[in-house]
Image 1 (cartoon, rainbow, N blue to C red):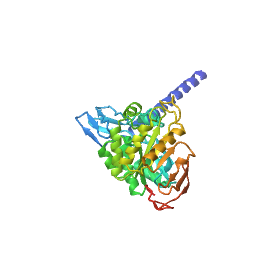
Image 2: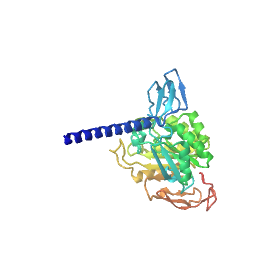
Image 3: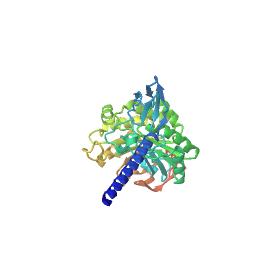
Image 4: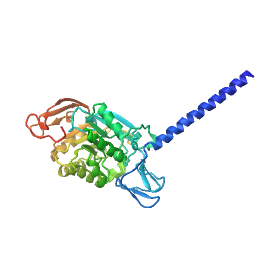
Length: 370
């Protein structure tokens, strides 16, 4: 009799425990979904149920309950909502060199944030576990724009970086944070693929100090097949960054057999020189097998070196090689006197001979924010 009573009590306690766990689980799931809900900017209401997003060139047409290509914007009752506002899934304190931003405040740190979602589908994405996920599928935390700025200041960061996934997707969150950061004397850095429409980009540029923009390739077929991207909107965005006075650096990930044609790379470099300026820093980055391109091999150092020489031959002054620690092309050299200006080992700065924005040895002005 006592044994049966004991078993009955155990079953009741187990049932109560399961119910309690389920309540917590569903409460967390609901919070996870609703935490970042915030009415979006840049959309057009077509009728009581239909909206068209105007943020990026995709211009997603959405009805009730539908989400955009980015997975982070949803239509409800004739309005468009972002689901990732104040809802980052990643935040870290990084060296500014990691972005990579080489010509802004060397040896300082950037408070870096990201949310789920992306408006591209790059098959080589190194952060695919957040960029190719919806906000329900990532581990998120609540962090308002005010809290981001406070955290950056508390940790003695000089800047806030919107990075890792695609900051265009958390546009409203980035914009509000950048406004507060600017007011507190912090710099704002955007690390992006630049797939955004003109009007929202121009507004954002009023608060962005520096941007590293990925030119993932200069071939339309490659961009469509590997990244689900068109080239023209990206080139327009790069010109807008330049026009609006944002310090601009460019990264090109060289993927073996796919976008390593030197003639195409030369065309890209000429375009950068003619449209963005010869002092625009260009980073050739080494590919490592990742995500859906695990069948390929790492980019040979010789390919990166050849691409760098092509870029230098076209007249670009600051050309770097990334993801090859210890390579001499990590350093910054004066285009005039050829002196070593900034010596880097990975993300560490060993010496900096840029003084008041100029070469310490010959006085040449070095583009950047110093």
